[in-house]
Length: 293
Ligand SMILES: [Zn+2]
Ligand SMILES: [Zn+2]
Picture 1 (cartoon, rainbow, N blue to C red):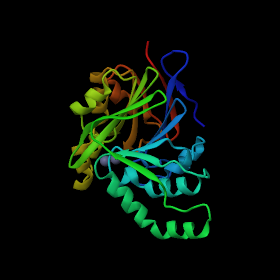
Picture 2: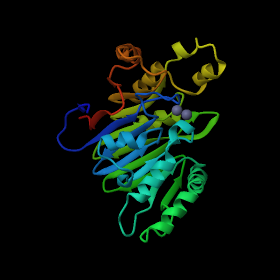
Picture 3: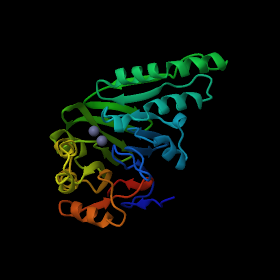
């Protein structure tokens, strides 16, 4: 298992970020779909739930029943590919007599997506309720749709949301998780925008999805070129990190996948715009984020 990279230096509280899935929409033998795990103050947040997320989470000792909340940046298929697995597996692997509903925080459209997913698994849910005496109701969920503002305040962990710009996918949101002076912002897919700038201002770390526009613009298929319209390049994500004055940029959701051995090339592109610490890597890359002094 990769060793965590310790950042900043303050005793005590920190936020742990694990890149569960760093892949793109194209299946990759070595990269799961976009998902990030954030652990803070004993709480566990899953941000997006791309392909293979629960297998990656199992590798760091996290099960679906152990999530404090599921946070969705947007409803693109690659970011919610395993929503059904998270809902059903969390339900059948929770043995609490009164299971706590899973909070799901996402943009408008999330409730409809969750409802439709539960409907798609309706036969399965029916089989299990019929078979197990202690399962009497479908997976309990508590969906909060929002585009801006405070969405979580529990035991020292607060979460704020702001709109991002991934049009024509809309609305889309980014999350800022604060715990005991440390803060991590999760941008999701977005072009540079004022909503993200405001959310990320002064944060200790920014987790940002990135694409290589310098490569994708040379691909012959227009559909691939289209991807450039609504994502940030490595340099644009790095410039956002610089404008916001964050301490660390954590890049993920690499499009195209990083060719083994070319990590330093991606890092160098980010370094043209951002002078802070730059993290990137394979699935399960883990970064400890402490408050900067
Ligand atoms: Zn997207
Ligand atoms: Zn995406």
